[in-house]
Image 1: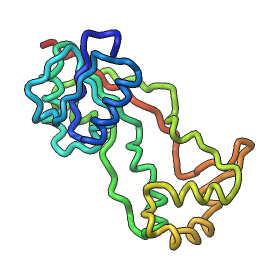
Image 2: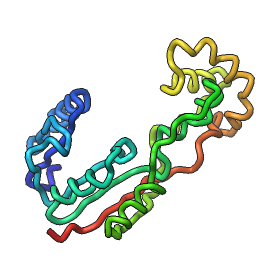
Image 3: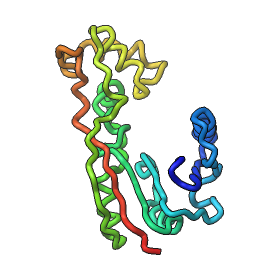
Length: 200
């Protein structure tokens, strides 16, 4: 943020907005401003670059959202998403605990064809770092079971019922390694940077 004139964070969530303002103040960033609205509600925001991260999974009208990003950017649009939508990575756990398939969110396999159909041919870069929040390697079986039970996929009221299910399927869910137990329901995942010039 300190490398540019101003950053506008268009954020409709009060919780996310409060966190943004707190972190900006803590870091001494004075040129970042919160706009508490959705992109559709904001008063014609305009900048050189429009950037969004981990949002498109949840957008129903993706065509309109992309056009709004383009309208806000005089030079470039940048979208970052993960190669697999993070909520989808809990599908195996959801199936095990609740006995039904989890509704899948759209990811890069759905976003890119939409962009192509809109006449947008973006540059796509696969970034090297794996998701930082998945680095944990439980050292004991009990810690591994706890990792699953405390995941947001398991509702707090269902944890007691879910424990024997996790324990009986432990060898399917985890593989031992020198670093600890490795979750097997997570495939390799990388962050994608999708970008194009707007030319406006």
